Length: 169
Image 1 (spheres, helix red, strand yellow):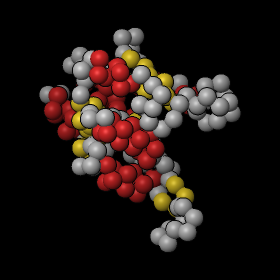
Image 2: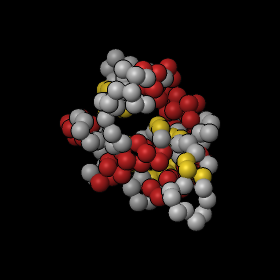
Image 3: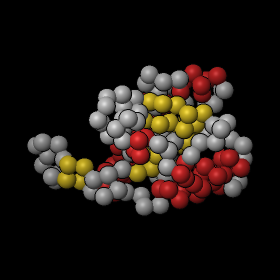
């Protein structure tokens, strides 16, 4: 089960608004170097190819990452600094993994991060061994906890509508 059923629609709205306003868009794709893993381009091309609603345009940057953060072992920080882009809007999957890692890393590097709560999503998750709370956590709970942990610490958690309003869209 996945959280945020409106993810695709909201990411599409944001991407369209950014493109219409000629704002920069950077796509981050996760490619695992180990064959046979979920995000291995050779083993599972459908998990690493961009979904049609987020297909990069020819002039948009694409950064390939091999782990959780979009910054570790990539050119992302150099790209952002070279363009003097200091404010980021981060969307995508999954809130508790790649989104959280990238947002926290961006904040640690001094970027101002906005995180639309309805343009990222995550999945159900089994509890860690010894959990006294539950044996499993549903996707919406995982999503809410991850967003709560980031809000006002390393990102401003907002809605897609709030981002669009700030763009005048």
